[in-house]
Amino acid sequence: MFDNIPRQARPILLLTFVNAIGGTLLIPVLPFVVRDLGQSDFVFALLIAAYPAAQFFAAPILGSLADHRGRRPILLVSQAGTAASWVLFGAAYFVTDSAGFALALIALSRVVDGLTGGNASVAAAYLADIVDEDARTRVFSMQGAIAGVALLFGPAMGSYSAASSLGFLGPAILAVAISTGTLIWMTVTLTESLPPEKRSAHFDANPLHQLNLISKARTLTGRSTLYRLFSIQGLFTLTFGGYTTIMALWYVDQLGVSEASVGLLMLATGVFLIFNEMVTLRFFEKRLGDVGTLLAGLVILPFALFFVRLPTSVIVFLPLSFLVNVGLALVLPTLQSVVTQAADEREEGQVQGINTSVSALASTIAPIVAGATYAAFGGGVTIWLAAGTALLTALTALASAGILATATGEELPGAQHAHREHGPVCALAQRAAGGRRSFALRVHGDRHEHHGLGRHRTKE
Image (cartoon, rainbow, N blue to C red; front, side, top):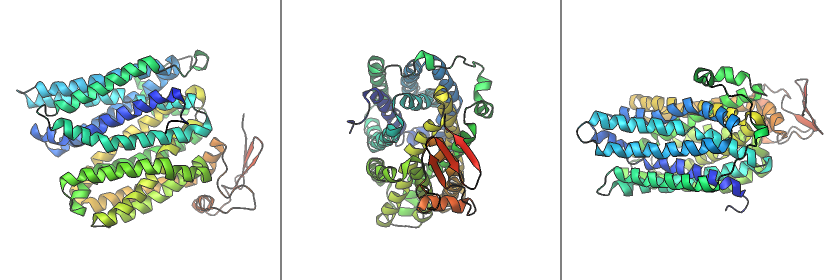
């Protein structure tokens, strides 16, 4: 499986796995820990939101710092922080005389993990440094498959370790061991990917400036394209976060499965994700390229979400769930790949930091909105809301298709000749643009021409 993956990328893929395991370990554990401490399910939702909220603040700072100081030291320090967050989580186990203080330690552990979880932006920048454009989607799809593996094993590991006499201290010990082992292995094997001559000369240490994403984005090279990509990222994350937040409840309430069977459905979801990242994505990517595959996934997703709300039996639900999974699998790696291609190499960390912050902000909002909607109106309305957000995401991406193709140097399917405007992605893009030939893209050497817009761009 790793034959075509650069050796230098393997520590980053391990980091992806460890971060994903850390999140999935808590899925079957944290709700019951919160209830045991006498707190409501809303407190549980706030603890879930604490991680991406902290990540929102940390990601742009870590990304910019990595552009200035290099990727390796930031990755190592942030991984040490992840291990420390699990120490805090485990420490709450020993607080027996104050439920409030125990809850505060758990909340602090989520915040610390989120602050160091901003290393996702640095990890993406690292991969962009070392992997050529032809291999980027393959490497990012491998990340998605690794996340699927974590989804397979993480909840089971969390449940098994928490079922021992140690209680929730068991998952904490397990996570500390995994995080510390990863830190040691990264220290030995991880090399620097950003040479000094390619680093940014200045780092703005003012956190208020770093967190002003609009101001930071205005300084980026190719910001018009990046604005669109950040918008797509935010809308897609709202869809993804809202759907995944309520799915466990949806399984029980709509499909009538037991709480114990929820783990089996999550297992199926993990298998779907691995298959789609390794097989379905490659099938689409070879034929459509990154931008075409991204658009295809975004178009599939709202229709899949619309229909997935209808079944009342697991047998009917699973194939529709697979279709939702196809949409997610096509979007997750290709969106990341297109962002890396649109970024200037000297701003890669900063771009990834902003992108991760946008995603983190949406990930903070999504569980709160989805949880409140589910409580007030039920799962059907919540999935309708997710489908509507997915549709808005698809329309935004289709309206930006020509710009994204230019940024990546790709031709949209069916746009190879001015007189040929066939192909499903091109047709959808033209329809989204009001029928104009805005997205018929012709490439003449280094010259990219958008017909119908009268704009020309020469690649440097």
